[in-house]
Length: 466
Ligand code: SAH
Ligand code: SF4
Ligand code: F3S
View 1 (cartoon, rainbow, N blue to C red):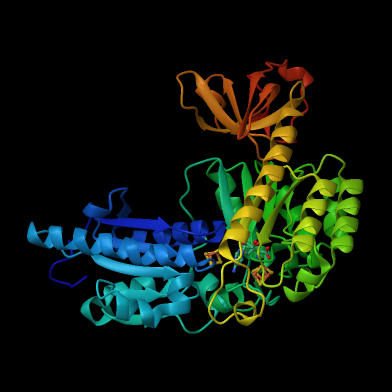
View 2: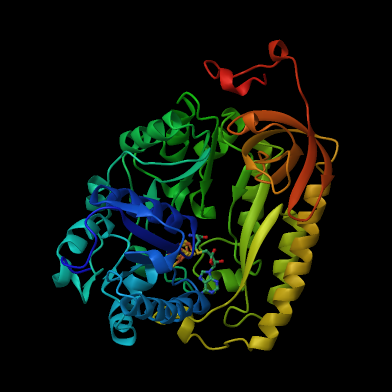
C-alpha cells in the first residue's frame, strides 16, 4: 500500500465475505467506495493489490477462519513480492475487526489495516494515506449515521435481486450473542435515503430487495416502522418483491403483520428466529418472550397471510439445556412446521454473559442434539418442498442454470426453482407449474400464458410473458 509501489490505475480488489447478509451488503458498499480510487474487482486474491477480509464473529469457528485465511494471504503476498510484483495491501474488516482488532494486529503482522463495520466510509482516506495507514486500527467508535451519510447512494449492481441495509445494530443483548458489541446499538436509516437507494437499484433492473437489519422489524426511520417503509418501497416501479431479515419476535407489530395481508410485494416468507422452545432457556437467553407467545404470534401471522412460510434459527446446547428443554424445542418445531431453518451448536463467545454461565453442555451432547434437530428440520423442509408439486408459483428468474437450456429463479417462498426456458426470462417473473420438490430446490414447467390474460402491476410490462 505504499505510494511508490501501488499501481496508479486499474488496481485490483479482492473481498472475501464471511457471516451474514449484512456483510455481503457491506462488501458491495466497500467496493462502491473504493471504485473511484481506481479499484476494480478480481476473483483471484493472488492478483489483488488490495485484499479485504470481511469477517464474522458470531461463533468461534467463524472467527478462527480469519486467522487461517491470513496465513494463506501471507504466503501469497510473499510469493508476489518475490516475483517483483506490487505490494499487496491487506485489510481486515467486519465483526472480528471490531471485536478483536488489537489481537489481529498482534497475531497477524501481514495485516495493514483493521476497520470495524462503522468505519467503512473512511477506507479511501486510510488507504490513500499510504504507509501511514499501515498498522492502523479503526474500529472503536459506533457512528452508523456518519457512515451511511458518507457512503454514496449510487450503487453498482448486476443482478435482479439485491440487499439493502435499513437498520443496523442491536439493543437486545441476548446473552449468547456478540452482535450488540460488534455492531453497536440500534440505528435506523431515514426512509428517504432508503427509497433513493431502492430507486437506484430498480433503475438497474433489480426486481427484488431484501431489507437487512440485525433487528429489521424494529426499523424506526420513518412513519409506521417497517410496514410503512415496505409500503413506500412497494410503490417503486419495477420493484415487485420485498423481503426483510432478520426479525425479532418482540418487534413483530400489528402494522407489519397486517401489511403481509395487504401488500402483494411483501413475500410470504418470514425468517423469525426463536432459538429455543424451552421457557427456561428463553429466559436465560434474555429473549424476552415465551414459547407460547411465539406460537401465538405465528398464529396471528398466518391469520393475516395463510400461506406464510416460516424460517428460523435454533441454538442447541445453551448452558443449562437439559434433554427436557431440548424436547420442548422439538415440540415447538412440530407445532410450527418450518419451511427451512438454520441450527447451531451453542458457541461460547468471550465477553457475553452466557459464556460465564454454569451448566455448559458437553460437545458430544450438542452434536447429538444437533443431529436430531436437523433430522426433524430436514424432514419439514422436504415436506414443504414436496407440498408445492402441482401448484403454480410465480418465479423471479435470476440466472442461467447449471445445464444448457435451464434457467434458475426463486419462488415467493425463496425456494430455488429450475425450469427449461429461454434466458430472456432472466429478470422477469413468470408462472411455473411445480413438477418436483427436492430437498434444496423445486423443478417445474413454464406456463406460457396469454399476455392479455395476465394481470401485470401497473406500469410493469416486464412482468408479462412475451
Ligand atoms: N439478529 C438476529 C440474528 C443474529 S445472529 C436475531 O436476533 O435472530 C444469527 C444466528 O446465529 C442467531 O439467530 C443464533 O441462532 C446464532 N447465534 C448467535 N450467537 C450464537 C452463539 N454464541 N452460538 C451459537 N449460535 C449463535
Ligand atoms: Fe444477537 Fe439477540 Fe441482537 Fe439477534 S436480537 S443480534 S441474537 S443480541
Ligand atoms: Fe457475523 Fe457480524 Fe453478521 S458477527 S453474523 S457478520 S453481524
